[in-house]
Image 1: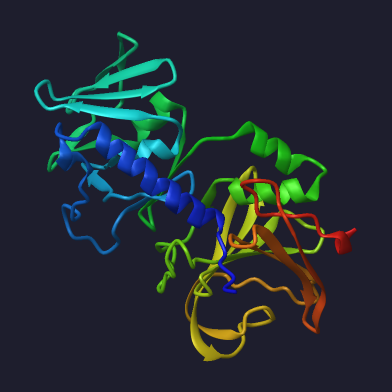
Image 2: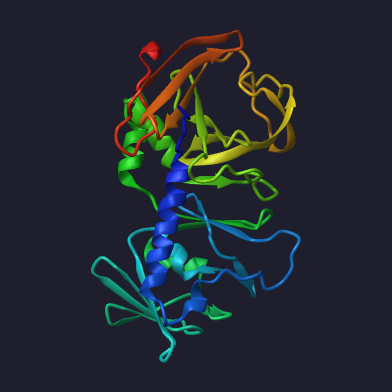
Length: 320
């Protein structure tokens, strides 16, 4: 039987396509070009990118006169938003909960529940696609926005109080699950590396690796292709190192759990010398997470358990 795994990322990928489909149906026949990916307006050495609650933006990021814009529909990853565009009045409508917003391209005045609200920058249309300025998103929708100038990367995220509470709690399993959901930021002087050979939503695989008994740093291996290392500080997971893996057998420093050489690296490679690690890999087919405790000498213990619905982390009895 084939063992198929599902990571947080692949779950989000599937959810993402469903939400995009719903958004396109909502506005069908009104302004279809608004949801069509376009080529960046101007060639640049580094193409700007945005990550919304850890999800990469589906559409091009546009920078105009020092203002960074993302597509309207990227807001769906900040919460339960619905969108509309009136081609006749040229107005953008956004609804979430009991709040209704109406924006007009090139206007810094927005209506929230019928009342005028000033924006620091106006939304724009780019080839028929509605774009919102990052700063206005933070001001209007309560999101936090960070910009990495060197990498041309924007990070837009909201703070989930329950996730923060779980991370700060004494339950190691819940804290590790929360660690995977914290905002992931980067201070690299270059764009973050990407999976070069994605396996697709069905076969995609992600392994999460923590130090034994720890929650504040983890490795993430996607599709046996991309390794990322994060450390958690002030409620955020900061990207410290990445590597794309090749097919040639070899080692990467003292990272004993990696069995192939890298083809590219970014950041500062961490060390696990003398460390014992715990890895977690969820199987969608079996609906369980396999875990393994290991060190440089080899495997110490392994097993599997069914996580709570929608979760990946499970309790590892051997860690107690």
